[in-house]
Image (tube, rainbow over all chains, first blue to last red; front, side, top):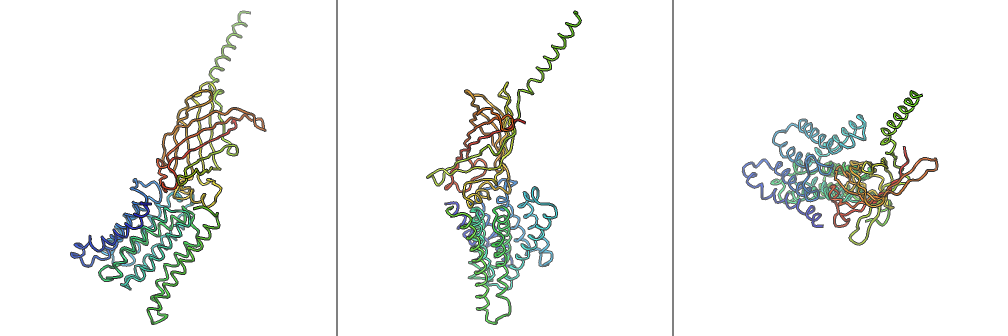
Length: 285
Length: 195
């Protein structure tokens, strides 16, 4: 119980503390490093949560869940440095695709080795890399457009919903891991809500999303999560764009509309997962 | 006459010698595990209040019985982790998922004996390598040789019954230690048909 509590609270505290306090000297020296510091903050926060749930993993990791710890380190390096070396969007997307593809190939290695044909592997990796990177880029673009980070708020709702879906799909471990990543992003987002210019979230959100995508993918392939809730959660990642469409001039209405759409999709995903959980066999829990 | 006797003596000696050479091969009988008449059961504490029981429905393997030298007996078993059955589908799905047996990543668990020591009567101490979640540990089973019988098709049958207690956390199955006990008692009953 203590471990679950640490996994839920520590990532938020670590991310917020690093973003606000620990990185202060770095921020003073390099005022334009906000995005990188955000990625590091969420990375350290998520790392704390993953270790709290899984313990310190061996290398090479024993299973897909333990590889998440190493993926977190890899994504930290990627997201913390990419704002430094790449303003070139195609290059950024290409590098992110390679890194995410590598992490996916490691996490899905048992299936690639024993279950999938070569063509099947290529199709799955291509679809998952394209989907994962496209959603990540979309979030990053929205956060850059909107410094008040409303997209991050909607992303938090989607990620929290994903954690509930993992729990109902039969893996408390993946639910805790997803919760730890969400908690870390929450710690960074709280600061951005109060001081959006000082605490830019694009690096933080990119890292949180890449880790969350890996956890959902593990849930789908290893915990046999239903495809419908995962698809609905993926669909809910597109709703922040509604707030940027010119369908109404009133931004309050647009934001409200995006919030309702995200909430509805997440609720539907949880509802379907819950129905499967309760109908598959009553009384377990 | 002497020559005929010598030839017969030589022939008899050769046959006896060949028989001695062939004896170890004929004494060790190899049996293939019949999953229908075998059981792979476990029990583990649930919330400290009771024992929760389950079984695995799919397994394969073989064992060798050497009547002349029981130390040469051997057992190899492979159990499909996705075949876990606790009479509750939601629990089966949870147990075969990443929290416990992680059946997609680790589709089998195996036991391969490394030594047989005869104790009293038909009981044995069987040491071997147990692999769960990709982690291999040496364990010792208390085994009983149940007996030999004839099947409906006339084939020779033999069976073993064995008990083993493990700590699941030794194999990296460390999730939910407060709810599900670390100590797991495994009961294996196998029947095999002579190959």
